[in-house]
Amino acid sequence: MTNPLIILDRDGVINYDSEYYIKSPDEWLPIPGSLAAIAQLNRAGYRVLIATNQSGVARGLYDLPMLSRIHEKLLNELASVGGHIEEIFFCPHHPDDNCDCRKPKLGMFKQIQAKYGADLSNTFFIGDTLTDIQVAQEVPCKPILVLTGKGQQTLSDHPELVSIPHFLDLAEAVRYVLGQ
Image (cartoon, rainbow, N blue to C red; front, top):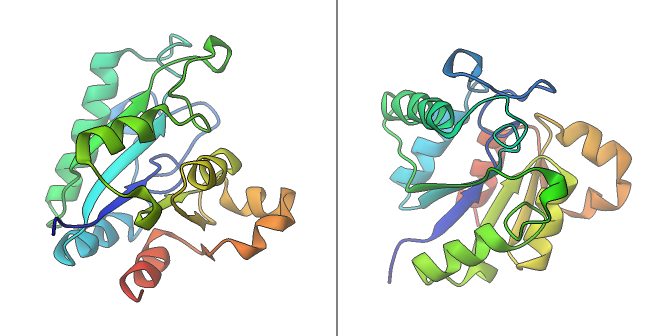
């Protein structure tokens, strides 16, 4: 049996989010405990993937080489605490582009399923927005909401999500996943 997958959103889950977008490596700052939590998943045998909307590319706020540098910083900082990401899937399109990969559409998850041959119904997806929960339910994956990033506002705006497992941050969510 292959190691299980877990899928994470990026902004607001692993690193601090910004209404002005994360446009450079200097702006990418990990949420305390998030990198150690990913390393903990790795040690427990999980293959960690990221699925993230990055419309800042289509908006002209940063280009693909800059996005690669941001991800390089993420991967380097994660490696320094003994963790790694199997692969980063991202949608660079504008919300108005009507692509099939921008969450809550299923494109990135279909790519993950095709590449990894995974039964996503047994895969956790941890996010901080309504679109993260919507895509997880549609796939279906096992959704988890973290209250970092936009998570607290998401829960306040959508009290029906109280039935979704929700946790203070990624570290707490990982403790839950590892306890299952």
